[in-house]
Amino acid sequence: MLAKIHRLSKTKDVQATLRGQSYFSPRFVIKFRRPRVSSDLNVRGTVIVSTKVAKRANVRNSIKRRFREAFRRHLSQLRPGDYAIIVKPAILSVPLTLIGHELIGFLKKVKLITIF
Image 1 (cartoon, rainbow, N blue to C red):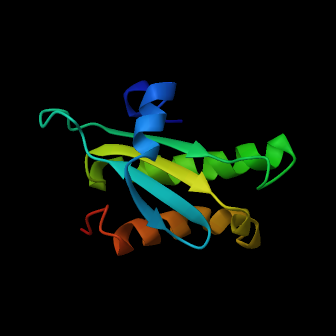
Image 2 (cartoon, one colour):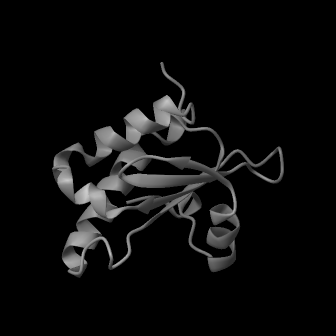
């Protein structure tokens, strides 16, 4: 579970992030917004899975948990700012155990994560 300071939970913050820079993958979209204040170096994120992706709530929640866990494990390596991960229906073709690898690989590709 993400710590409270790393959650993007207010509606106005999520909407502002959705107007940020977009990175498109076949299975999800990442919206990124840089911090407004240069002293704010927090990384905050949210995962959005609509009913178009999966009708059953337990499937949607499972997908969200996998994305959040991968996001949490790499918080220290992510660029500061707000992230919104919007999941597409194509994610169902990937085994649940590989969702985290998909996310981290894509973040490295678009240079939102530093490689150590």
